[in-house]
Every structure is written in C-alpha cells, then in structure tokens.
Length: 291
Image (cartoon, rainbow, N blue to C red; front, top):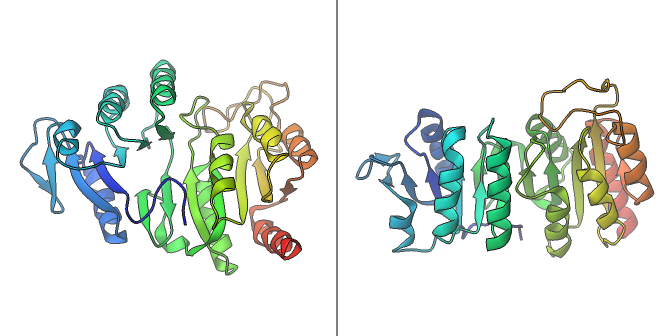
C-alpha cells in the first residue's frame, strides 16, 4: 500500500506544454503514472507525448474523475492553477515550482485546508509510490517497493537517502519531497499521521533541517506513534542568520538549530543518524527490535 498516490490515481499535468513539463510528462508516463490529460490555456487540441491538452482542468474533470494534479506553471500563475484544481475537485496537488510569493502560498494553504485538499510543496521534487506511480522527479531507479516511508524537506538529500536505503536491500512504500519553503501546504506532522495509518509502512524516515518549528511539532506527535521513526537533521555547522539554500533553512539563533531539533527528536524516541549512510543500519535495527 502507499499513501496519497497509487497505481489507480488519475493525474492531470497543469502547464504541460512547457519544455520541462513535457520532459517530466514523458518520464511519468514511462513509469506508469495514469495521466488522463494536460492543461495549457490556448493550447487545446494539441498533444504532449500522446496526452491530450485542454484549455482548462474543468474540461477534463467534467467527463472523468481526477485524483491528482502536478503544476508546472510559473510562480506568479501557481495560485490560479491551484484554485482551478481545487474548484475541479482535485484532492492531491503537487507543486514543484520555486519562488512562489509567500502570501500566495498562505492563500493556497488556507484554501486547501478548508476543502480537504493535500498540497505537496511548493519547491519540492514531488513524490513516488515505488512500483505504482510517480508525480515529479524523484528518480524511480533509486527506489524499490517496500515498507519504509520517507519524508524529506530537501529534494537532493531525499534522492541520496532513498538510493542508500534501496542499496541496503530495503524498499519504500512512498517517498515524498515535501518542499523547502518556510510555508508549505502540508507539514511533516501530516505525513507522519498518514504513514502511521498505512498498514504497509512499518517505519518512517524523516529528513529535516535547520529553520522553522516543523520538527518540534512532529516530535510531539511522534511521542504518540506506534511506528518507529528514524531521522537525520541537516545543518549542524550552520551559522545563525545565514541562509543555507532553502528559504526555510535559516537559523534565527533561537530554538531552530540542528542541535536543539536533534535533542527534541531524541527525547521523543527518534533514532538520529549521524550521516545519511547510517540510516539503513538504524532502520534494520529498529525493524529487528519490532519483530
């Protein structure tokens, strides 16, 4: 089983006619993602890798169920695209786009929460349920089906850790790059709750970083979980006030340092890896202890 996305999910690509979106459409089709249409205003009647293009998402949703959308429009147009998807009844929206105005993201977050819509991102690589479906650019060749759920704020780190887990002979139920911005659609605690309910996920890997309070919120929930959590927190050497790539990865000098987050997670019972390559060993140790 997987969370949020599986082999039956019917997907729409918004902004499908852009060069990058077209390339990603081809990759997702190759992996087996069920893409039922593309959206690009003014391009109705054209095709991208055999996928019919419509002017609006509502045209597609009027004749068939759409479970998920991935948005490849430019940052100023993302809010409009998300609004159209939500109004068309889509319940899972992935937003890889960077540099979306924070105010727009806050509006998106509010709309999604009110309508019961799940937002992955912004500023993310997307998600994959190995052997079932792919939304975005999490390299399928690094994954195999299994029982490890992966949540990551860093796209690059998620690729490295997923590859390392696979090389150790462990597979994944669902891997999600949740985004590196300060304001996200859904936060780590939401994904932990989803994995906790998933009968085929036995352990969760949560990759965090400096900045913000997301890991603290997650730690409070982890104390109540039955499934074990392994974590790696990036930014032990970060200097206060210096941005480390992600918008959210900046230490204000308060509680949002890597050291404080690690201590908080350890107090919640989380196994902390010293390096990404320690993660498979910790997973195996926790699973053996559970059996």
